[in-house]
Length: 110
Image 1 (cartoon, one colour):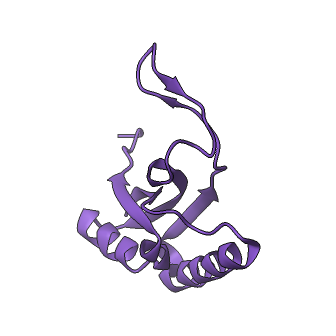
Image 2 (cartoon, one colour; image 1 turned 30 degrees about the vertical axis):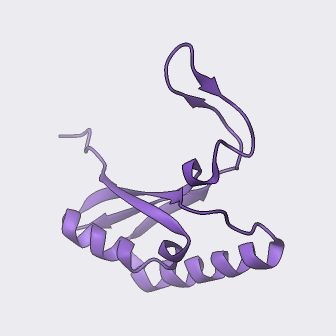
């Protein structure tokens, strides 16, 4: 099995009210339970940060840039290949609120 990073990227303004956030988190946790052995880890990111485009262009306004630019978090899964990883990512309920970017992680031991 190979590891894949799923980046969770904002695609529209979301409610960060406690109830809405809790609902998304509950749906996500249920999904993690359904993908069982494919799940490795995840982490939610804060809404602030810096976007460094080049040495002269750094944006640190918050919330972090435009909502559509927010990388809200990531999940690491394992899958047989990219197609299998895409299939797993497409089953994630966060796809209703975010764009998901699936990238293979380079195995540095090879």
